[in-house]
Image (tube, rainbow, N blue to C red; front, side, top):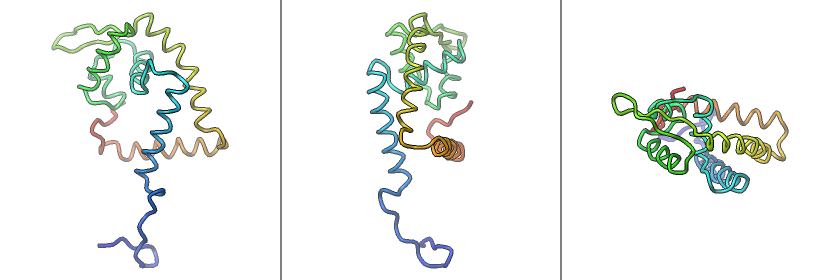
Length: 158
């Protein structure tokens, strides 16, 4: 059954460049490319999110960390192992095979260096937009993510 507009006429198909999924994928491509351009390739955007959360909430266990950054637990375990091998975190074994994650001094130094660069990245991403449009985009993306959180393979659980 075709969707109809308010007047009852069939709605035309969306142009590819107006499809939300396509636009979101392109926005992701652009932000990742700009992330690497601004911050280098030592840290991925997802690794940055993990490090940032550990800086904000020291000593999280791996499962809680996964929930707070919307990753599945196996991906989080892989990322934690990589970050540990780089010397940026320590994984401490807890009861019931859980692991507590703590930034090392090197990890804290890294986050302190990257955070201002991420602020600059944000400014670059919104260059050419006025502040109201930038805030509207963030507000609408946040709303979209919140409304569709449970559709994710790894829902955010703040």
